[in-house]
Length: 313
Ligand code: BDR
Ligand code: CA
Image (tube, rainbow, N blue to C red):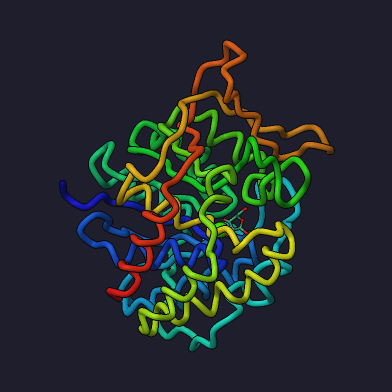
């Protein structure tokens, strides 16, 4: 199988960094056409910078990084410095990037790439709020049928919410964008909290990262140490969830994941449950399925893959 062409849309974020590193470490399976930054965990000037820091950490300064939207489609930006720190990548000390930021807007890059490449050959991998993706689909409806698949991190059903009692962060920040994406008709695979909360970085797994003793693995371990302080306090679990690399791991080894093809709708009106992913897991409605909603993961297999691949960089 030739490597799959993807665009990573991201708001780094330590777990976004892990997802990007896993993709860049896996050229046999994944060809990163470009990385588009979006405002989310921290504002856009930091997410675009962090994306470049991560590419340089991976030793891949030639990857094209674009800045996309600085705020959600209709709402004010909500950020998550309380989880990711002031920079979004708190933990290790990493140098400022020297690779350039591309001058093209991230949304234009998504549109142009989908129009130029063969139809059905480009997969979009959103790891943050869906603002860039929905903006592209809205500005250029002709690209909808050209997308091979969207594999995204966002939402929750059994785990409900992490930023409000009812909503997961990526969907909550831009629910109108999420609504556009879930209604687009594009093939969608979703990594909700239901699965990412099973991808826990236990002390043994952090030790395995450190034992790999490479620059990249040590930096990743330092990032994990930083955000674990917050997450393990919050969840009382034996390690923090590593959300976003579930997306890139799925592209490499889909057999690590199982889920259900179901209907998923986004709450955009209620103040109380704004951004909720109303997932018909039990198939109690007649609404048409629109997403493969992942529910389970082989966590040991996932961390084996992640650590082995990161150690290659
Ligand atoms: C998601 O929100 C962000 O804080 C993480 O990077 C991840 O994409 C988890 O809810
Ligand atoms: Ca993210």
